[in-house]
Amino acid sequence: MNVEFKNVNKHFGNVHANKNINLTIPSGSIQGILGENGAGKSTLMKVLSGFIHADSGSEILLDGVPVIMNSPADAIKHGIGMLHQDPLDFPPMKILDNFLLGMPSSFFPNRKEATQDFNLLAKEYGFSLDPENYVDSLTVGERQQLEIMRLLFLGVRLFILDEPTTGISTAQKEKLFTTLRKFPEQAMTVIFVSHKLEDVESLCDRVVVLRAGELVGELTPPYQTKKFVEMMFGKEVTLGERQSAPVGETVLSLNDVSLEDARLKIKNINVEVREGEVIGLAGMEGSGQNLFMRACAGLVRPVGGKIQLKSQDLSGKSYHVFKRNGVSFLPAARLEEALVPGLTLTDHFVLAEEPRGIFIDRVAGQTLTQERIQSFNIRGTPHTPVESLSGGNQQRAELALLQNPLSLILLEHPTRGLDIESVIYIWGKLKERCKQNASIIFMSSDLEEILQYSDRVLVFFSGKISQPLDANKTSVEELGELIGGKGWAEIGGEHA
View 1 (spheres, rainbow, N blue to C red):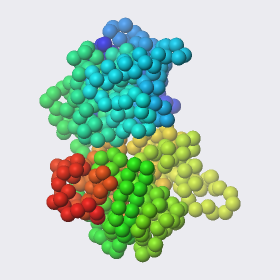
View 2: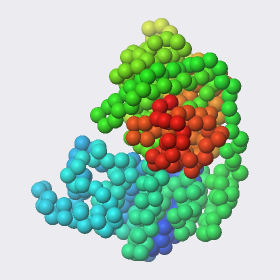
View 3: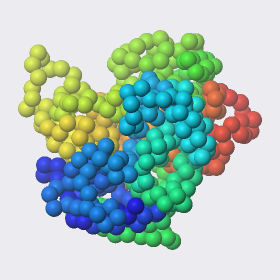
View 4: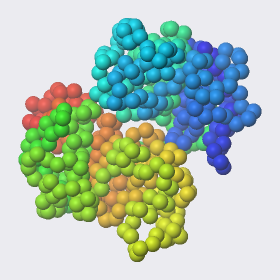
């Protein structure tokens, strides 16, 4: 399927999200669309997939024929399907029931035939999914596989993937790429939307770059990373040297702490975190780092041992007690656990401040919000609903909501889905906190990020925790082996 965008424009109020986009994507190709957060990538793809409508005068042609997609269902009828960053599924339902969603069939589908079709598709693409299992038992990568199968079964011939490698492991990414490389062989087209240079370079036949809503150029192999960065940001961007703050007194100590949930048990954790120190947590999804993080925040109670914050025993205390003692937790699910959809930036900053009297001072709240918007470079206004912000700006808003002073900041995937410039900016703000004697513990699936910004690293594998590793003396390859369960004897046991 050949796709043409002709003079595509899209406004959201005063924001010109797409500016006169003209682009042709040949049938049977893997087309990369690269750009920083807020560049207009997702907007353009939502226009193509029927989720939003372009401005008048915009035109989309499929195999030379102008089409109008009024809804995602229309797009599916034209053979276009979109795999979103967060897969569109229903976790409480069975895999087979999710597979059948959107099928133009009778009210009671033939489940036996559907199971046979499901298994044939799974076998063809090498997916190991049991149709009778529930979706909430799947990893993010497996949920992507389910969505790909569902779209294939609906007859989709053009796949749009929006930031599909966000939140999945290296092994899951390799599996996804192996699947996508099969599509051109079957005359299917892939549009791969990302801000990750290494992903588009390894997968795509050709790449266009968007910046501030405009298409600024197109590249074909052999790719030059430096050129991509310059096109994305209009300048050269580098990570710079590693920065370590002087470490001080012990802030957090875990003594023989044991944790468990329905799937995992971790025994006898012993670790100390000092003022100004950054501890990175590395491991496959579900290896225990999330459990560890939430225990340090007071959201999970240990089944044994002692958690001390600046010599104060907080074992078994609630999240609110931890928070009152200078612990702040920023979860990965921004709109589910960290921010409140429907509320504006001003609402959030007012709620985050200590109340001063009975009534809310809206004028003071808006002044404070404007100050934080400028200080944290948030692309929004005091009246902007948080759900309308890009992922990078939501993350900046979360950081701007942190109280001062803090003893311990806990972050789940602080830069997930963000472009390199936003990553550098956010870590610059976090390192400022370290200079103010705050300690940071963060988890990430990006091993390079862990080594770049951590002082020490804890590796998690199947309920085991490594001794603390010096990030300066550890390589990505060594971390990768430990995450996969190799080399544990050489680093001295399984507790920190």
